[in-house]
Length: 311
Length: 252
Ligand SMILES: Nc1ncnc2c1ncn2[C@@H]1O[C@H](COP(=O)(O)OP(=O)(O)OP(=O)(O)O)[C@@H](O)[C@H]1O
Ligand SMILES: [Mg+2]
Image (cartoon, rainbow over all chains, first blue to last red; front, side, top):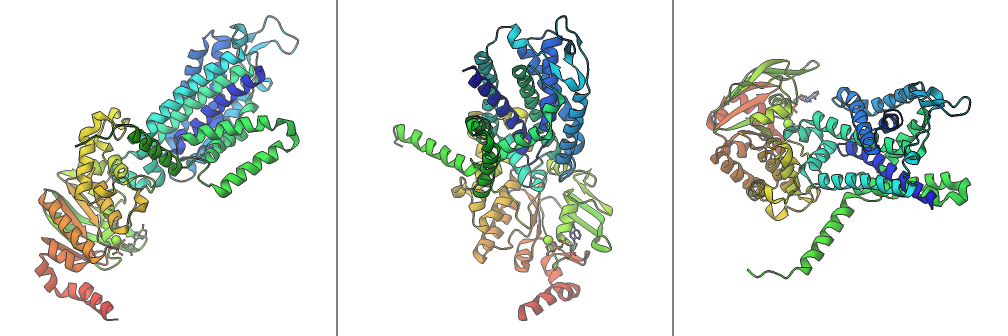
């Protein structure tokens, strides 16, 4: 059972990671570097609970803020430029962050511990071990899954509200045609930076949550592979509405686990699924049109229930 | 209201706009004519900040426009429509116009939905714009499903939502059938009568002649003449450069 709770918590982490990509995706900016903000969040979050005695929630929030600050650093200079500069910058930044995390050492010696395992805090290439917050505070995996999904719920609701607001409409206009956006007075660069920084914040929280399930992280957890999977959640689930990242992250986390018994073909099947979706539904599984149709179907139902008003 | 002085733009060696002076008075309906490639669209791009001029200046109500970004220029009250229609395909007509109100709004309003009670006034403004542009019956259709004539109207509706003082229209009738063009002529006149200053680029000479109180003619980036419809019509340079060639085309 505990295994499935771990999967549930990891699924929540992945949903957050997917939304971190989606935030800037809405304005047409493709980040292949979310692993960097995820990694920054993981290291900051774990450092705060392990070394500074923070409680989990505060650590997760501060990790989000730290990752948001890192994304300002990447976003401000590159989002003014057109074309692929931004995407390339995110890849480069993610690689730089990985190398830095891989070579970071701070913290203090551990009282107990075997030879060669006597450090509390990030220890260079050995990684950051003994992130024992859950154990120390008697939080079960089941309880942790609930904590993770509570945060997911807040983020999903936030996106649900934003999606129906003018902000989303403006971001979509930027995505489709920046010239139109500027012609109606939209400060395009500012919108893009803010969307990207929100994504950085979410990735940071996600990373901190991840670190506390795994209890052991290292720079090599945050490779470009992770960034591309995060992007795949959005592209396969569907990048046109906020339901896509949710569906994509859940399916692409749970399906591989279900397929675990046929381990050898798992990755191949996974790859096949991606190819099939891209071939037959380039908009991803859920498109904007689908959501609009559901929306009007629901509205029609609600109207049918209400007694008709006579004028 | 709008003072353009000796503005020029060259692309490589080509002078797309060559030292053009124009002055548009408040409440005017100003027409710009010129054959293909004579620099009309380029002139609009210079006025709206999408291109930097090689030389020259533009003042609008005392503000220098050159050096400002397009988004700043709209904020001053200069809106435009595009010759090649551009719009967000997956937005409905209503959403397109609704989004274009954004620059006047604070953060709170930006986060509100289209049907929020606090947004009544803004929603009414959208409705009134849609009504004036014949889009009201199509408000909930996706922009990409509109017939072409109405897409042109959507361009105008979106520009109006920015609450402009002056509207620069780049060939709003191109691709319209005669009855749509006739309707548009009425619409433009009505907009002007409502207090909006309008600069109109059009290929349709009849339309410009009938509608505009002042007309400038460009050829190879230069202004060859400016005046009332009658003055322009009788100018030999215009006949040679524009009307003449047009006639030849018509016969060919
Ligand atoms: N971005 C650009 N780069 C290079 N040349 C350009 C650019 N934009 C316009 N031109 C050139 O400048 C000249 C003027 O073009 P412009 O589009 O302003 O003409 P126009 O009067 O609007 O023509 P039309 O009636 O066909 O719309 C043309 O020769 C065109 O090829
Ligand atoms: Mg043109």
